[in-house]
Image (cartoon, rainbow over all chains, first blue to last red; front, side, top):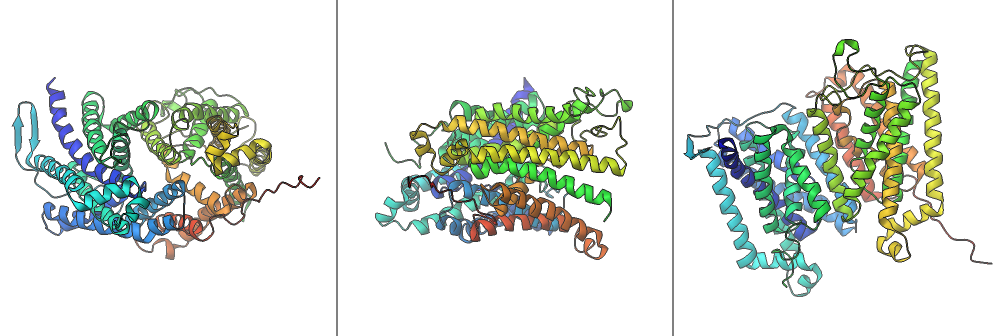
Length: 294
Length: 324
């Protein structure tokens, strides 16, 4: 039984990592209507940036901030230079999925000659173990959980109380109507890519820190877990993605304890299939933060 | 240019043409973005392999797999085709019924990654990460595969398979059924409103495409004699998408052209570049193969931007019987 309690502790860390990533992903989709399949590769790029900073002797926490900034600028440019022009041209949703997959392939293969095939890990002392019953977490893991909690509260505050957040929700619900009401939707969409890109970059560093070692091939594994969490919660719904992250994080860690850690993504995929068969609209399809009221 | 090289080129071209015809039927004609296309090719290859391999205790038992039936040609190829079709049923049932078309695409992409992970980790099932080796090629009990005449024979049976695949997809595309498919691709709701059942249409095409993809996998594994998870990673599907987009979506001749330009052409160019030591040693290792993927990505973006209809656009079909 202790094994499962310990796994619950790891589940808390996992869900924090997934939540940061999945909320960013789902907001991109919900507000800009773009399924950004290059999300996992942007995460990996930021993780590598932090890795090189870390190698140069800079603390991983500064690397995390740098990763977030990098992800933010990278995602913004990706939208401005690639996605937005294709969307303006009237490329259908399906075409956009192909575009983003092509971009994802290009990022990982531009990165590959620079960083190489092999796994790397951060030089970071995870700090002393902190015990709570059978749950034992390192200081770093607790910091990760704290970052996730603060970010989720921040996203909630942004969407609920700020003018920008309200404008985002309006844009998500009906872009044309929002524009006619005087909301500068273009600026709103730009800021969405900046904010979600920061979440994406930060999530990349956090995920790499949590995974002990990472390689370029991890990008697709990240993406699958994020997709599972986002679809489970109802794609485009930030609160849904948070719930999805909690469930996916817990279930994958518990199954890793009960079965085999190799199959974490397979379990995430199993959940994805179940959701797609039983409730394709996800858990929170009707009344999420981004849906119109009522 | 010797016989082996020419045979190799022709067989790869044949396999890529069959695969592109199947993908064009699904993606170009019917609008199903099958991002797990390579999985259907892989399942055909695995099925053909275990149907033609001896039981896994043979060869000193160095590899582990289920089956091992040692059946003669053409049973492995037929089995590969059937396996592709059978896999399409549960996948189509989950993916094609309720989901929005872009969800379908990401679900299939995820399936492709996961299927690879599962087969890699399940090392007793189909050889795991190491895969299956020493797969007996067709007729190997009667003709030595290392002879020139065998190469001609394999080219011959590949061409027969290409002709059959082309005849089937052409028949479908030019029939009234093909018209329903195009109607569904252009506007699914309108097609449904005039009594076409989009789910049935998609399921059928998914299965037909799966059968053809399975066949292409069976031909490939019979030729290269080995099969492993590393040869069917999801980016392989993207090459085939690039081929269909470049060649011309919805045009079978375009799909053939795309198959010759993209997968075959790229394979040859990388091989030529790597055979030149001055270029091959340039920069970090894997630079050329990495750049190849970047160029495939650029090709997709470039064609979608400048010429989305491809080199050979889909013919505009005009109804001419209205005058009388």
